[in-house]
Length: 212
Length: 279
Image (tube, rainbow over all chains, first blue to last red):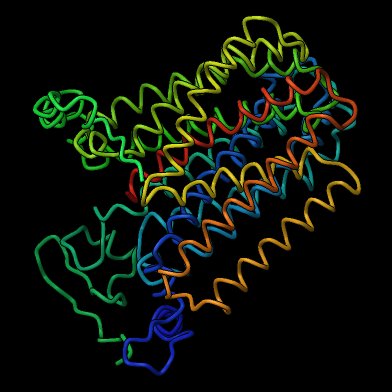
């Protein structure tokens, strides 16, 4: 079901009737400059997003700006963080749209989405619970343990998101190549275009699922 | 069209460059399965640290961002992290470069990146940090370094804009400047600026998708170059307006010029680094 959707998304959506017509996804990937601009913008927006969130997290850890109220830093910095996060997500979605099947079956992309989800949960917990008492510790040089734990988790999780994001384009683990069973399992290679192959060289070809 | 790859300046170094990837530290980086990618992660994280610290320190000089705290206090609190970022970018860059030397030797984008790195270090350590430490006052030495660093920055930008296959990367700088201006501008001026920018974007889209067919590269290329120049003129014009307007910030037009340059120079470095892969 999902594979059919991804196949339609990558190979059919927006495709005209001409023989050499491309789907929107294929056109984006094959564009002369636009894909490169998107990827570059994704990276530069990440500079702003992760760079600003790092500063807020360091304040919450009591490592920097210790004499300055937490709210002075977070109120000024978080609008920049949110704005850049929107930019990172939009460019990220566009990049995903250019090769949805490949990314879907890539182990690093799956880990990245997992860590991203955890990072977002951490943000919700911080704003929902930890920040509720901020008035009582806003001026503290070292905020209370829950705030510091949340900041440490944030730094850790966003670093993991960056690591997995950078590893995604590398084809060390790729469906169809000889690789451990657990990697094939995590990547759901059996349902991928290239099927799966275990370390013993046994192949399990996927159904031919590209539209004719 | 410019082609200023290092191979044109140092042709006698070719044999040495060809062998760099096979000896340490290049071979150490390339050896392990995720060696190269891991150092790239270090490079990106260093860039993130430079980005966050530079943007916040210089936005403050522009009267935006953490405005409730003096620039000197922001500088004192962020300088260590900025140092780690700069050291990290140089160390990881050297390692990645050693493993990938042949490609860099033949790349104009790499030349731009090295110029941006040099200009970035000069504009950060010689200009922006002393200016922030002095709460916006621009002393004599920062002025001297601003001229030197600014000249290298503009030369690098010139190469980027005139080299085929990487010239499109200038849109990253335009985007960065556009976003900085949104943060810096206030009130009606901000909306006027956004409206003008929006009109340009719509005009370019209509021109390059409806008036001219999207696959007609021969006609698209000059039209896109004209729009790039128009974006540049609009954004630089808006930035010039902010130099002489605005409230609440320390320092005068020169302080703000320092701040714009100190942010954009690192964006140029990141842009050139990314476009090495596309050249």
